Length: 109
Ligand code: AMP
Ligand code: ZN
Image (cartoon, rainbow, N blue to C red; front, top):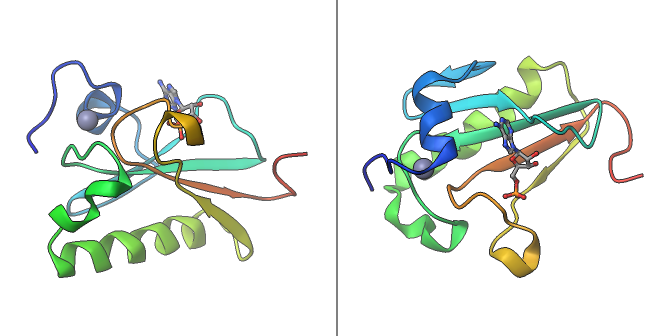
């Protein structure tokens, strides 16, 4: 889906500070970190939730996962958590697919 005018993460894809980038994907720092390192991986293309993952081409989906791992590696993380909240009852608050990368300590304590 094209960039959504009212979507915060579409805006951060366009003009945010990116800690990592690859074709079709960017990573940003979470504004309210829940671990010493808390990054968010965003596809540039607007997709509401992981439920719509089939809208990615197989190669694009593979590259997205590789970009998640690459972002963690670039941040110096060896052990880390990857979290995707899907839907409001699971804690999703921003409806542009994003992958939380948490590490550098034990998150959620
Ligand atoms: P979720 O609750 O899974 O939808 O995750 C949304 C995440 O976006 C939360 O961890 C927020 O802290 C983070 N967030 C909200 N606004 C911003 C922002 N302006 N820049 C970076 N991260 C943000
Ligand atoms: Zn968006």
